Image (cartoon, rainbow, N blue to C red; front, side, top):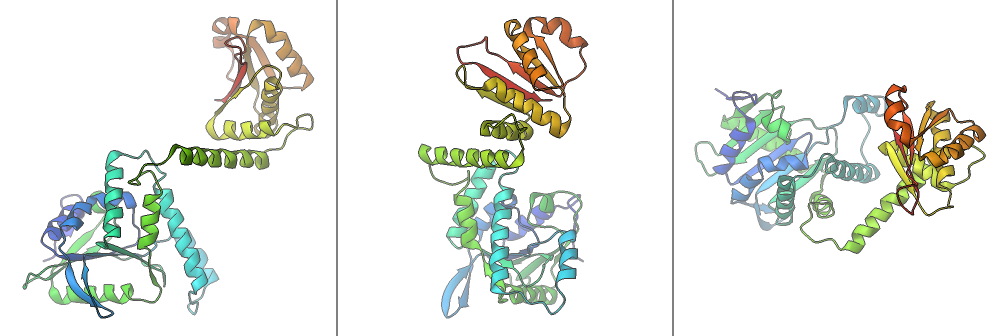
Length: 367
């Protein structure tokens, strides 16, 4: 009788690791592969001794083959069903496009959440296993492949092949969390057929090797096993700041009275992060920049502004409010404690801190 793995009473991660300890190699087919989920089985891959195979006349040792089906969202599949009929055939151009898309998706995985020490350790381990050909990864492109299959091979003469078949992808959730359903396949006739099914797809013309792509992705991110020179970090920061600057310039439109590119960049930061600081020496237009920001967010998002400033420049700010027809209230910082609790809420706040140091500055926040 097959054993059920629903990650409640029996966890697939435990059944798989216990089987791999007694095995020499493995074949995995999944619809989705999370690079960070590799830690669930990474150590067991290192225990595989490999089995000799003959490919193209060369004697090789095979350890672990991973076939990724590139699972798509239901909405994407529905769109494709209207675009392509059953006679549609993939071509080389489409392969290149899908390969680039997959590389982007793997990179996006690694930008989510705060990296942990464990993430770093096991991503480096995966990179090492890929470089040593202990793990080979292919992408199945002929058609969307949703199958989840894990096969382990050993020298056991009674049960040389053990399969696990069900719903679990190669992710932490798939191997250890609830909501999955899998069974082991011990019957050797069925296991042999599953092995042949895997080989047929692995050897398909449109099944492409992406091992080197994954190595490059891992070696270019925070998990890379190398020191990054400060100059390269500086270039990376400059690149992303320039991208945000260009995004701000194209994203917002200034009222005719304002022509400063800096306003557009600051508007982008304010909208994206909820706050921005404008700092420079006297006379370079920080007040007019903050006023422009208030005007943009008033016109685009219908926000009113609260301006907090030193008492000696309250009159100046009131003149700006009148001149540029801002929906704003000016309040001196000396009156904040007594008056602020009784005011209604303002979502846009300008804090003029020109009294704090020789370099004047304005802080603008969206609440």
